[in-house]
Image (cartoon, rainbow, N blue to C red; front, side, top):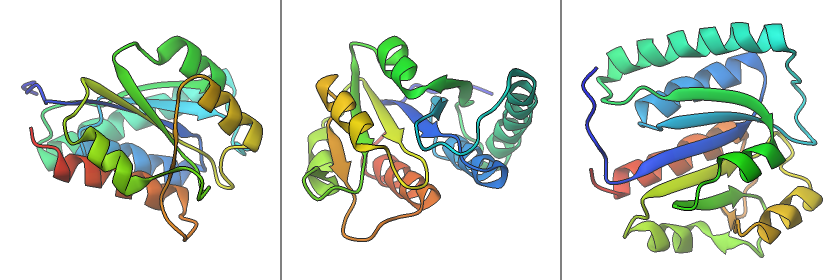
Length: 178
């Protein structure tokens, strides 16, 4: 596939959900031109993958990426990584040019509209953190905030993880030009 540089490098980290949900998220990440998709394990992650299962899943996800790229003519192949613990992703994968955001259903968080205003003049890279069903624990949220990652509130309704993932990535891709 030809590579076309976007004005924004987009990374996402998703707590690993059940198989069919993850397959869907991988497909949508590719269609929306996410360059890196990190699989995370959080305290509330239900699916804990052993090494062999993780390798099989990664091969399946890579095939899904290729098929989604063909269908959508996406200029970028999403790189699938992990699973890693949430803390590892933050400490080892969050770069100095990344602008991170963690999505959490807390009205005290930064409203999504304010986050979008902040990124309309895009930073070089966004790193978005999506939690498991039930969200990140309060301890994980406090720790992330101590690492400089603001929490973002998506509104009064509690969204399913795939709805939040798809909605946020779609809004970013449609509002930030190539």
